[in-house]
Image (cartoon, rainbow, N blue to C red; front, side):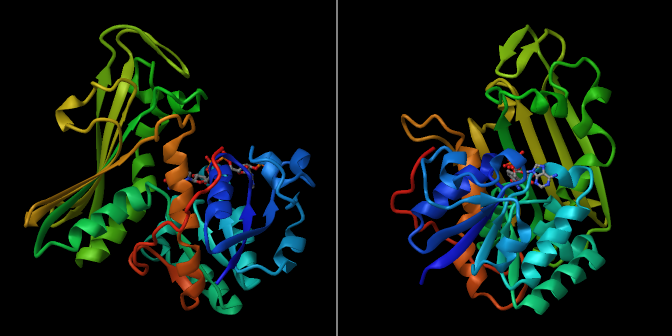
Length: 355
Ligand SMILES: NC(=O)c1ccc[n+]([C@@H]2O[C@H](COP(=O)([O-])OP(=O)(O)OC[C@H]3O[C@@H](n4cnc5c(N)ncnc54)[C@H](OP(=O)(O)O)[C@@H]3O)[C@@H](O)[C@H]2O)c1
């Protein structure tokens, strides 16, 4: 069966999603929504660096809602940080129009049930009204942390704790946004927005609750802490200069406590030099799930580029975490789905085009 897909935005991850849809044996691209005025009426393939495809991007939401399609691949940018309300309204309208959604936007939606009952009810009602389903994935939150931990838990008899890690070397990011976000190059941790009280909890609470429900415990309190590594000498990365004595690496943890014990933990190791935090024994970019219990289980997931590939493999993986889910989401009963509901959804891309 071929599922008709509308791509909603043509940004960084969206471009990889379009390449994934084109290469997927079961998917067909039938439309696209663009946010920027200058993209209106342009060929989606041209916008995504893939050459002309004969599919035009439009800013006309009503026209797209009326376009026959099975699924929308929803990859709106990070406006959820400031105000998610307008985009959430669009999401509800898409679901009410009868189109299924695979979504990357807004971490909360990875497991909205545990985060916000009203939000969950609105989404669920929109699904029931339209006979549609939605799943939200990604890498973290998403497959890299929760998905990997769920795979490890399939082998456990006793579970004392679940610890999920993301390891990322940010030296190659060109925009200064990431440098500002983590406070790289700053002397004072107070200038690192990610370390402001409550921020890491907002990003990761959804993953903690998903895993807590998976192992059958209820989180009573969420606490956060961090460790910083300071540059012992000055060095340069793609986004700028890191002076000696300033923040060169950030390691933060968000812990879900049950009876005062950290039962479920998300930890990020964000660095600029490969050797920082070497004590964790993880080279390159990727994810780790550690289940303490019987048996003890560690799963490492490494993301890397094949020889000669100059794109961002993490962006490819993020996009494919939703693109590969399209057939399962389209086949599901109407409602709000999570990684707890869907079995792993493998790639069906014999030869997708590369950006
Ligand atoms: N969970 C994960 O692991 C994970 C990983 C990667 C990304 N993500 C999420 O995936 C989404 C896409 O990421 P990205 O890196 O591809 O983002 P991006 O390149 O910054 O932006 C994606 C698109 O958002 C559109 N946009 C910007 N402001 C908008 C607004 N106010 N309303 C509607 N659309 C707007 C832009 O449209 P125009 O180009 O037309 O201006 C752009 O194409 C983000 O929400 C991000 O948080 C999650």
